[in-house]
Image 1 (spheres, rainbow, N blue to C red):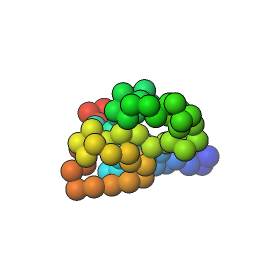
Image 2 (image 1 turned 135 degrees about the vertical axis):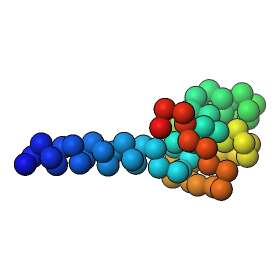
Image 3 (image 1 turned 60 degrees about the vertical axis):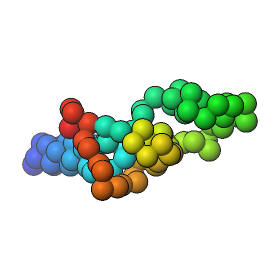
Length: 81
């Protein structure tokens, strides 16, 4: 019985990882260093790698910061999903 729960939990986690949101979109620049390259001087303020950025990343399509749970109509899944 507990084995079935584990399988269901694993399947649910995979679905969540590939859900149509910015965290699983091919346009999201996962590398935090791309923020400093796109916003010159950001690290000077201590924000480039600090808590103010948190899970936000650069959307290469919209050229703006996005949170992992954000969504838009141009979502394209990461090929592995």
